[in-house]
Length: 353
Image (cartoon, rainbow, N blue to C red; front, side):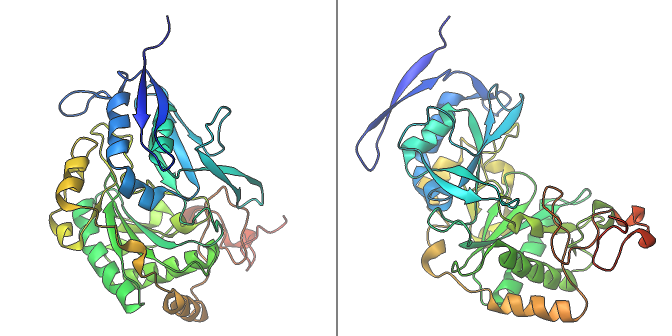
């Protein structure tokens, strides 16, 4: 039996586009409040929020987190345009940490987002750089990640203090919910520094925040060292390391959305209120808090001077994710509790290798 299919007409910069949407009644979020949210409803959602969505996620490399059978099923990531991708879905050649290159999907219009939904995409993961210059980020991104025993209540004061730190460094911060338990703080920056340099700026900001809130914030990479604190996930600033984009749904039972908010909303924020069903009305009522984000990008010179100061004081490179090649100056990739000092040299290399 052929699967159910409907045809959608989607306005675009070059006129209307016609797209087929298969299985529109398939439940993507079967346990959502008010009844299951279907693939058809998700397609309606992305069309409604397409303008602010494209402002923050469009025109840059994006990874698509796809679920063939709804969020309860298996997922996988698409980076390369799959066979049969329509010509209005663009791509750009990207260089990855291994030195390998391949094209990555770029969304530039509403029909491209709807196509991604047709491909069973739930979560959209944009890079911090634009397709016009994939090597140099236009955003400094900081993920405030609550560790076990903490939650949004503990992340809120950390976010306020982080904003103060960033302002001292000459940067204006914007904030959104992660769609889960954490908060994402973004600063627009001029694209003059590549990813590793921006990562050092993030580490410098995180270390300064940690100094001010040592009992509540940590930059410790190893989970055994974090305790019940908010982790500043500096490695989300790396090339090809992404977080859910603004207005992207999350693959969570309540169909929550990673949602930009104003700073004066933060103290009372409840991330569970922002869902595929509620965010369109919020946008209609309040507009997009991130609409002006790229109007005045800042510079990271001050943060980099803090990085240099910390290096001079003995605080050097931090660990990289396991899929990265061993990086210059990186400490040993071994849990501190399992490290045998005699097995490692001063450069973080295992003795005998």
